[in-house]
Image (cartoon, rainbow, N blue to C red):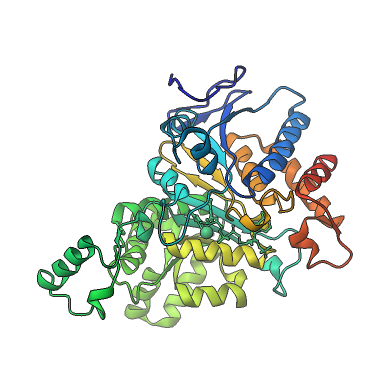
Length: 431
Ligand SMILES: NC(=O)C1=CN([C@@H]2O[C@H](COP(=O)(O)OP(=O)(O)OC[C@H]3O[C@@H](n4cnc5c(N)ncnc54)[C@H](OP(=O)(O)O)[C@@H]3O)[C@@H](O)[C@H]2O)C=CC1
Ligand SMILES: O=C(O)CCC(=O)C(=O)O
Ligand SMILES: [Mg+2]
């Protein structure tokens, strides 16, 4: 059992463990939380009240979360002079399942992302972001109800690895000289004033992400997995992500899937009609169709033909863009949940899709829906489905009563705009 120098462990909870690959959840699990920066304290205070009330109501006191505050970001720096204390990482490792608010990352200099650091430290290789529509939520598109996608964003590689050198430094000069002299690179347009970034994408990293997406699709009886990439331009990183994804699908999932790589082979051998028939037969047999889409085309097709997409497997940067874009289609990132997961170790850090929304910090104003729905994903992960369902139903009911925070109120006719904390109270009353 780890000991913590600076953290106060709750006195009444028990540890979640993993046995034979399965999560063992006591009735009063200790769950670490990071409140977050900016609007983090507002949304966390609201969301945790709703989570506690739903658990209490669903299990009549038999189950209860023992919250364990751990620190990262500005609160950690103010308290301990460190942005991401070791105690925090130890707690997240030891207690397996945790939840966090958003943390600030400065642009262009200063500390690197603590959010990304947490994912890397715990090797949380999947960023899982389901995007669905809640009836009554205002949306900028005509048919938001056609959006029902689950994004599997690769969370450990790509340019998020943070391997980059700044213009003008001796390091970047060395890298550029190496590229020019040893690798015969002639295409750096302005070598004297370039910064350089490196984008690692591996076979292992791709395979574990695509495997998780296909497993999810099979378990939840989804129709397709779309590999989203920019492989026409980045041939050996994003292009290989696509190729490795198809190979993994065919090798490990055999006749439970039908891939567009198979489609192309049948087409080359027997023509388009035979390939179309093979795909139609696979669909009729309930096989998962594994297909791919180039990222720019994908971003327009999620607007024009969202019903054609289901589970999405993509790289880190594409996944970041796609998750905010899709969230906007169903009403904004105020209600877009997420989780960072390692399916092998069982570690999971639940986390809203949005950031710290600093201009609203401390105003008790923003929508707590995103971190709350991340908490709902956490309850489902714990197997506490009844409490999770209760919150979803309450969310639907409250939105239908048009009791909403500013982000929805500004787009809704006849809405009653409430504060972040008041929205939580309305949700609790509707449980
Ligand atoms: N995982 C994490 O912790 C993340 C952290 N960040 C960090 O957050 C900081 C701010 O990033 P920024 O680019 O401004 O993006 P944000 O997601 O913080 O905010 C952008 C806009 O999204 C809307 N929004 C965000 N949260 C909510 C909410 N809870 N309810 C309603 N609307 C919301 C607001 O829109 P409007 O102005 O229209 O009201 C807001 O101005 C940066 O330091 C960034 O690095 C960013 C993303 C993820
Ligand atoms: O870490 C950050 O500051 C931003 C991360 C982000 O945008 C995301 O994970 O969606
Ligand atoms: Mg983002």
